[in-house]
Amino acid sequence: MPTPSMEDYIEQIYLLIENKGYARVSDIAEALSVHPSSVTKMVQKLDRNEYLIYEKYRGLILTPKGKKTGKRLVYRHELLEQFLKMIGVAEENIYHDVEGIEHHLSWNAIDRIGDLVQYFEENPERLEELNRMQNKMED
Ligand SMILES: [Mn+2]
Image 1 (tube, helix red, strand yellow):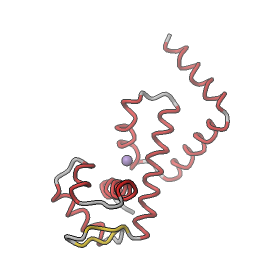
Image 2 (tube, rainbow, N blue to C red; image 1 turned 180 degrees about the vertical axis):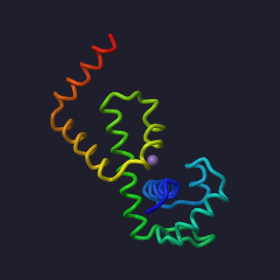
Image 3 (cartoon, protein in one colour; image 1 turned 30 degrees about the horizontal axis):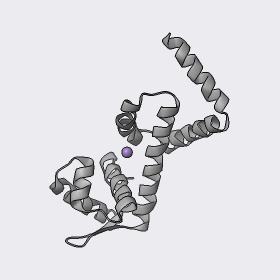
């Protein structure tokens, strides 16, 4: 199992490759607001753990294991953003809150939150009911 820090890197590398087609050490450092030397260290660790293949000067590619993990981590992040937005969390808190909780929930909890998001999508009147209750409490 990757550590929270490994998860952050795998997630960002996956997103960079998806959006730009490649992930350079400098791009990863910028995305995560860390020093490039920390990125190099972590990328070597992820290589040893078979999430990616890193060759100095040639860049890095995700292995099938790295791609599968990255895809799950991006899904988890997006699901949690969608969930917090749905239940009325203010826009300016959402990204930071998700970054804070995403590594600390079991996949069991993620799947159950996924059920709830799906339930609200299929029953929008329930979500409106929740929003009305929240508005009433604010008055
Ligand atoms: Mn994230």
